[in-house]
Amino acid sequence: MAEIQIKDREGNVTGTVEINPLDIPVKGDGNNPLYYYVKAYLANQRAGTASTKTRGEVSGGGKKPWRQKGTGRARVGSIRSPLWRGGGIIFGPKPRDFSQKITKSLRLSAYRSAMKRAIEEGKITLVESLDVESHKTKDFKAVLEKLSVKPGIENILIVVNQISNNLYLSSRNIPDVCVLLAKDVNPYDLLWAEKILVDRASWETLIERTKKKKGIDK
Image (cartoon, rainbow, N blue to C red):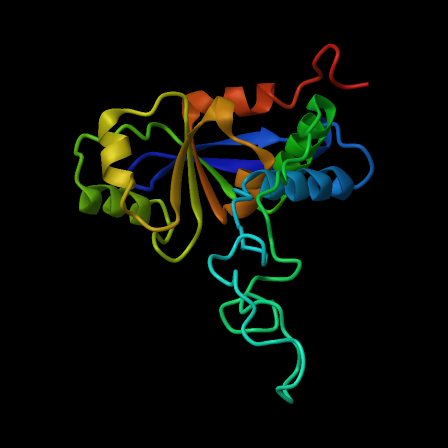
């Protein structure tokens, strides 16, 4: 049984929530789904736009530099040969699609594993409310410090059901701070974060997403 602290914005503990990580159904040790999910997720972030020119695409080189025989030099047909400076590239990268398919069952299994790991490692802290009254970055940094997290040093994930304008403006310039809706949190986000601050109202959303869903889990 794991205990998750509930704090107010001043950092005072106002209560605890008990949750048994074993209540989150995970197949095996949960590492396989996480591995395949993260591998596919990172592959899907790749633009795949790297490109080089072959000897047929490099401009110039239409004329043979010198005659084939009689000069004593090696024969060459174009100054755009891959052997020459400024020539084409052999087997260089070309635009390609790196995307991999992530099935619903894999996404669910990976999410369950990541949530269980976050709970067991004590990453999660519940906060009564993360609504801030100011749009100033320094004011929000002060709130984070009161909640025992280190902005700019730790990877901090903030989970809410609704992102207010003040929360968005005050958090966007702090390094390694990510604000997400509870319905959009994915397994990679949970693994990336070293500290996870969850709005009290959005905790139920995170837990509900670990439940068995018809047609997804078998």
